[in-house]
Image 1 (cartoon, rainbow, N blue to C red):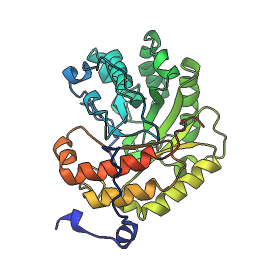
Image 2: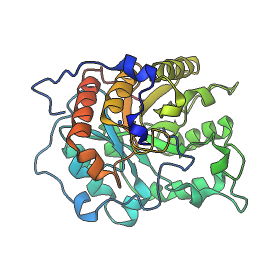
Image 3: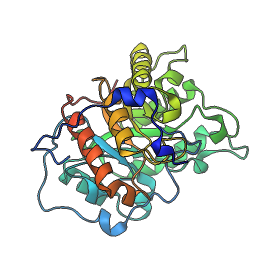
Image 4: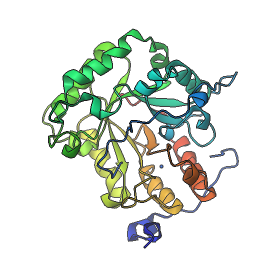
Length: 317
């Protein structure tokens, strides 16, 4: 059975007519694996590309994908999530930031990399090891990219609620707040976000002072995307958090890729809310051929137009 041929009732209900503006050339993960793979290095030659002229940010909320290379920032995508550890190790950290800025893009930076590097011998999250990973960036000056808004936020951690990623033990919300506090001590102006639904973050009875945002990415098993975004917005507002949303395009339909029509309908539902500060989907790396198909490209252009019509806002709480 081809899973992309399934048509849930909410999917049919959410279909909207395609509106393509002539001036625009313009999807969280259901997987139990964290979303920052160990080979998130893109292409070194691609990261060195940088136009000789700066392209002004086109407006709206950032719309993009995980592992998006610099060369893909332009008419369809203007937002990305990148593993900064890999960029440093390949000597492309500064050129990548410069390239993103020059193409009118914005980026979420994961500064500590793949989660296996900050767990203890039992597989549990280690705050000490996480801080050690983060401390490497204390000697790298990238403050100008924080000040000018090229860096949207510090991506602190992926799926802390999924105990299977952390040796059978969730990363508690109080620890997430402590992580955000440590980040703010090093870079006071950089927003902090956790890649987890605001529903998990809202279960904490404490107050978030340093953590700025939640990140809710939709997959089909989470049901009606309208209900999904409404719940996450309500829980984010309850705790005074910003919200990032998006799609799992690669494995979002019960482990399979989303069809183009589902990208459009579910993405439109998520973008029906004016609350999210960015729309970043999983993922670009390894999915280039699928994303380059005419139907998927058209669906992404359709969503980019919607994202660009939203009022730009900071991801700070």
